[in-house]
Amino acid sequence: MPLRKPDDRARRSPLLPRPRAQGLLSAAAVVLLLTGCTPDQTPAPPPTPTGSVAEPAPSPDSTPAGPALVPDGSAEDNLPFFTQIVRSVWNGDGRGAGRAYVDALVAGGFDRGAMQVTADTSTVGNPAESIQVSVRWGEQCLIGQVGEATGEPVTTVLGALPDGACLLGETRPIDW
Image 1: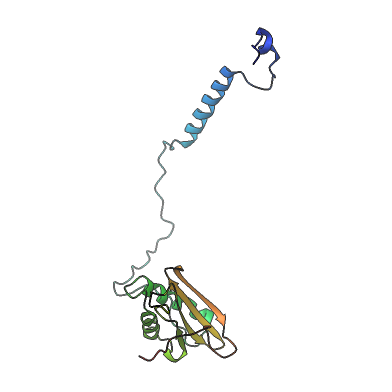
Image 2 (image 1 turned 90 degrees about the vertical axis):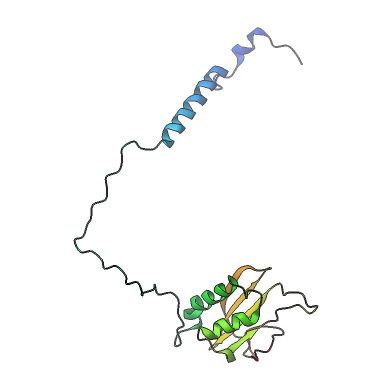
Protein backbone atom coordinates (compact mmCIF):
# COMPACT_ATOMS: atom_id res chain seq x y z
CA MET A 1 0.00 0.00 0.00
CA PRO A 2 1.54 3.30 -1.02
CA LEU A 3 2.09 5.98 1.55
CA ARG A 4 -0.15 8.98 1.42
CA LYS A 5 1.35 12.14 0.10
CA PRO A 6 0.81 15.42 1.95
CA ASP A 7 -1.22 16.85 -0.90
CA ASP A 8 -3.81 13.97 -0.81
CA ARG A 9 -6.04 16.11 1.42
CA ALA A 10 -6.24 18.79 -1.17
CA ARG A 11 -7.57 16.27 -3.73
CA ARG A 12 -10.60 15.21 -1.67
CA SER A 13 -13.97 15.78 -3.22
CA PRO A 14 -15.52 19.02 -1.99
CA LEU A 15 -18.86 17.17 -1.63
CA LEU A 16 -17.59 14.88 1.13
CA PRO A 17 -17.39 16.58 4.55
CA ARG A 18 -14.20 16.39 6.50
CA PRO A 19 -14.10 14.26 9.67
CA ARG A 20 -14.56 17.26 11.97
CA ALA A 21 -17.53 18.48 9.94
CA GLN A 22 -19.01 14.98 9.96
CA GLY A 23 -18.82 14.91 13.74
CA LEU A 24 -20.53 18.30 14.04
CA LEU A 25 -23.27 17.26 11.62
CA SER A 26 -23.85 14.03 13.55
CA ALA A 27 -24.06 15.88 16.86
CA ALA A 28 -26.50 18.40 15.39
CA ALA A 29 -28.69 15.60 14.03
CA VAL A 30 -28.80 13.88 17.44
CA VAL A 31 -29.76 17.14 19.16
CA LEU A 32 -32.55 17.74 16.64
CA LEU A 33 -33.87 14.20 17.06
CA LEU A 34 -33.84 14.41 20.84
CA THR A 35 -35.51 17.80 20.80
CA GLY A 36 -38.33 16.37 18.70
CA CYS A 37 -38.81 13.54 21.23
CA THR A 38 -39.15 15.68 24.36
CA PRO A 39 -42.67 16.14 25.69
CA ASP A 40 -44.44 19.46 25.43
CA GLN A 41 -43.96 21.40 28.66
CA THR A 42 -47.35 23.11 28.41
CA PRO A 43 -50.14 20.98 29.88
CA ALA A 44 -53.18 20.53 27.72
CA PRO A 45 -56.30 22.32 28.94
CA PRO A 46 -58.97 20.05 30.42
CA PRO A 47 -61.74 19.13 27.99
CA THR A 48 -64.84 21.24 28.24
CA PRO A 49 -68.25 19.59 28.15
CA THR A 50 -70.14 20.18 24.91
CA GLY A 51 -73.61 19.06 25.97
CA SER A 52 -75.80 19.88 28.91
CA VAL A 53 -77.61 16.54 29.19
CA ALA A 54 -75.79 13.66 30.86
CA GLU A 55 -76.29 10.20 29.41
CA PRO A 56 -77.91 7.73 31.79
CA ALA A 57 -75.58 5.13 33.24
CA PRO A 58 -76.35 1.56 32.18
CA SER A 59 -78.19 -0.45 34.78
CA PRO A 60 -76.16 -3.14 36.56
CA ASP A 61 -78.24 -5.96 35.07
CA SER A 62 -77.90 -4.78 31.46
CA THR A 63 -75.24 -6.45 29.35
CA PRO A 64 -73.82 -5.28 26.06
CA ALA A 65 -75.47 -6.97 23.12
CA GLY A 66 -73.10 -9.37 21.41
CA PRO A 67 -73.63 -11.73 18.52
CA ALA A 68 -76.81 -13.78 18.72
CA LEU A 69 -78.52 -16.48 16.71
CA VAL A 70 -80.55 -15.03 13.84
CA PRO A 71 -83.03 -17.84 13.06
CA ASP A 72 -84.42 -16.12 9.95
CA GLY A 73 -81.00 -14.83 8.88
CA SER A 74 -78.43 -16.18 6.47
CA ALA A 75 -75.34 -18.20 7.26
CA GLU A 76 -73.35 -14.94 6.98
CA ASP A 77 -75.69 -13.34 9.54
CA ASN A 78 -75.01 -16.20 11.96
CA LEU A 79 -71.26 -16.46 11.41
CA PRO A 80 -70.36 -14.02 14.25
CA PHE A 81 -72.39 -16.05 16.77
CA PHE A 82 -71.02 -19.36 15.46
CA THR A 83 -67.49 -17.93 15.71
CA GLN A 84 -68.08 -16.71 19.26
CA ILE A 85 -69.23 -20.17 20.37
CA VAL A 86 -66.32 -21.96 18.67
CA ARG A 87 -63.80 -19.56 20.24
CA SER A 88 -65.43 -19.91 23.64
CA VAL A 89 -65.06 -23.70 23.57
CA TRP A 90 -61.49 -23.39 22.22
CA ASN A 91 -60.58 -21.16 25.18
CA GLY A 92 -62.10 -23.62 27.67
CA ASP A 93 -61.33 -27.10 28.96
CA GLY A 94 -63.03 -28.98 26.11
CA ARG A 95 -60.92 -27.57 23.30
CA GLY A 96 -59.85 -30.99 22.01
CA ALA A 97 -63.27 -32.65 22.10
CA GLY A 98 -65.60 -32.39 19.13
CA ARG A 99 -68.55 -33.12 21.39
CA ALA A 100 -67.86 -29.92 23.36
CA TYR A 101 -68.28 -27.86 20.18
CA VAL A 102 -71.48 -29.67 19.18
CA ASP A 103 -72.97 -29.32 22.68
CA ALA A 104 -72.10 -25.61 22.84
CA LEU A 105 -73.60 -24.97 19.40
CA VAL A 106 -76.79 -26.84 20.37
CA ALA A 107 -76.97 -24.80 23.59
CA GLY A 108 -76.65 -21.68 21.42
CA GLY A 109 -79.70 -22.73 19.39
CA PHE A 110 -78.13 -24.40 16.34
CA ASP A 111 -79.81 -27.58 15.04
CA ARG A 112 -77.94 -30.76 16.08
CA GLY A 113 -79.41 -32.59 13.07
CA ALA A 114 -77.70 -30.11 10.71
CA MET A 115 -74.25 -30.64 12.25
CA GLN A 116 -71.20 -32.66 11.34
CA VAL A 117 -68.00 -33.09 13.35
CA THR A 118 -64.76 -34.92 12.68
CA ALA A 119 -63.09 -37.36 15.07
CA ASP A 120 -61.14 -36.24 18.14
CA THR A 121 -58.41 -38.80 17.52
CA SER A 122 -56.37 -39.99 14.58
CA THR A 123 -56.66 -43.50 13.15
CA VAL A 124 -53.84 -44.62 15.46
CA GLY A 125 -55.40 -43.09 18.58
CA ASN A 126 -53.42 -39.85 18.87
CA PRO A 127 -55.22 -36.56 19.48
CA ALA A 128 -56.39 -35.09 16.17
CA GLU A 129 -54.26 -32.25 14.87
CA SER A 130 -57.47 -30.44 14.03
CA ILE A 131 -61.20 -30.91 14.44
CA GLN A 132 -63.81 -29.56 12.04
CA VAL A 133 -67.38 -28.82 13.01
CA SER A 134 -70.13 -27.60 10.72
CA VAL A 135 -73.76 -26.52 10.72
CA ARG A 136 -75.79 -26.68 7.52
CA TRP A 137 -77.73 -23.44 7.10
CA GLY A 138 -79.93 -23.54 4.02
CA GLU A 139 -77.69 -24.07 1.01
CA GLN A 140 -74.64 -22.91 2.96
CA CYS A 141 -72.48 -24.21 5.79
CA LEU A 142 -70.99 -22.59 8.85
CA ILE A 143 -67.63 -24.33 9.23
CA GLY A 144 -65.15 -24.15 12.08
CA GLN A 145 -61.71 -25.68 12.37
CA VAL A 146 -59.77 -25.88 15.63
CA GLY A 147 -56.69 -27.69 16.82
CA GLU A 148 -53.03 -27.39 17.57
CA ALA A 149 -52.23 -27.48 13.84
CA THR A 150 -54.62 -24.59 13.22
CA GLY A 151 -53.58 -22.30 16.05
CA GLU A 152 -56.52 -20.01 16.69
CA PRO A 153 -59.99 -21.14 15.58
CA VAL A 154 -60.88 -20.53 11.95
CA THR A 155 -64.51 -20.09 10.90
CA THR A 156 -66.09 -19.42 7.53
CA VAL A 157 -69.21 -19.80 5.43
CA LEU A 158 -69.02 -22.09 2.40
CA GLY A 159 -71.55 -23.59 0.03
CA ALA A 160 -72.87 -27.03 0.84
CA LEU A 161 -71.45 -29.99 -1.08
CA PRO A 162 -73.57 -31.52 -3.87
CA ASP A 163 -74.65 -34.34 -1.54
CA GLY A 164 -75.89 -31.80 1.04
CA ALA A 165 -73.02 -32.37 3.47
CA CYS A 166 -70.71 -29.64 4.69
CA LEU A 167 -67.54 -31.62 5.44
CA LEU A 168 -65.61 -33.91 3.11
CA GLY A 169 -64.40 -37.25 4.32
CA GLU A 170 -65.36 -39.28 7.34
CA THR A 171 -67.22 -37.63 10.20
CA ARG A 172 -68.29 -39.14 13.50
CA PRO A 173 -71.92 -39.79 14.35
CA ILE A 174 -73.54 -37.21 16.61
CA ASP A 175 -75.53 -39.76 18.60
CA TRP A 176 -75.50 -38.43 22.13
